[in-house]
Image 1: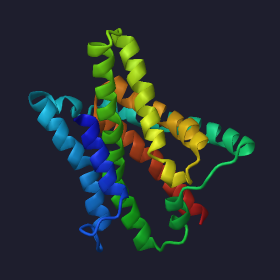
Image 2 (image 1 turned 180 degrees about the horizontal axis):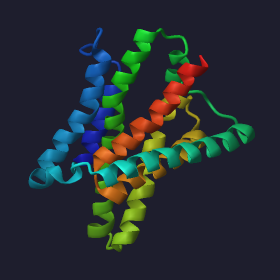
Image 3 (image 1 turned 135 degrees about the horizontal axis):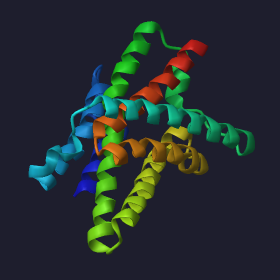
Image 4 (image 1 turned 90 degrees about the vertical axis):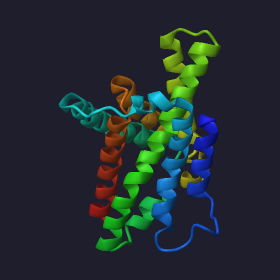
Length: 215
């Protein structure tokens, strides 16, 4: 049920639908992207729904910024190696960002917040599902179950980015998947989806702002 909810949310975000047209269609899609799987998660978890939503402490904020910085270093390093060896596809959203005016760029940044939170939901809920299967169904140790869930959820994250990178499988699995492995450490360390979401927003906004500055 969890994985189905995530799949439906992602479909609403990426597939054109007659009901989701107009000026605010992008915002509505981004909200439904995380809202649909979270509703399913609530139906499954009910009394424990709040478990992934913990209060932010100064320590967790520190983890957020550290993971964002670490991810930028790792992503740039792997991306540079990948670009010089196999070549890489550009993200269409970043390319379009170069030609936008100030108002469009500000709107883009604001709209990215619910979508990036949705990407965390798309990763963390499957992580928990895979963790459950590994520990409760396959009889793996907790450590092995966490490792299995960590890698599988990062693979899912990489694969859903295929349309954004012109179906470059190697780039999505190696570069995007590696970035996701780092970002997921924020959740594994704190068990708080707000921390991984914050790290994700910081990471992507730095990239967005660099693209804007270069343009």
